[in-house]
Length: 189
Image 1 (cartoon, rainbow, N blue to C red):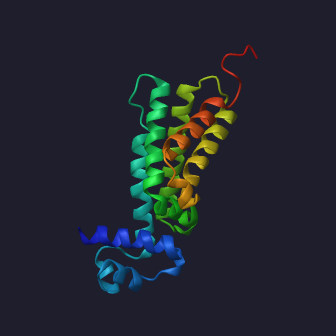
Image 2 (cartoon, rainbow, N blue to C red; image 1 turned 90 degrees about the horizontal axis):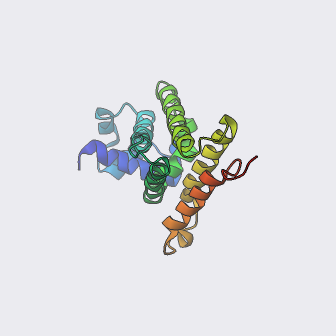
């Protein structure tokens, strides 16, 4: 495994366990099997490491929001499935994002804020394709509510996440939220 990857993996776990401010470069080096000072050959410091971890996750999540299916509902379901699987497989990283995104400093904070807005707009486009009757306010609230539910799995108890079929339960909850918001598509009002 490349050293920069070992550093990132060690940092993700350490930041998850102790928080961004609770871990120093020496500890990150020890966890990655390197000396603290040698980490500076790969990263300028903890701020860059945090930014790289969050950017890697955002790269993957943004890629999954690109429309690929002609059927808007199938496209939404595909993107949701990817996000459910990501949230379940990367709970420490999702927790890191939820707790530590405010720890990002410039220049990384400004760039990440732009990417986060891009991500939100991409989700709103996906939801809008499947639910074109939603006005902008309901669309935004629906998107934020469902993404919040989706990424809340990072804080769910292990016993809940170990239940058989939990991914399908999450998919069902999120899909119902995405498709059940706003006016009933079949009503005349």
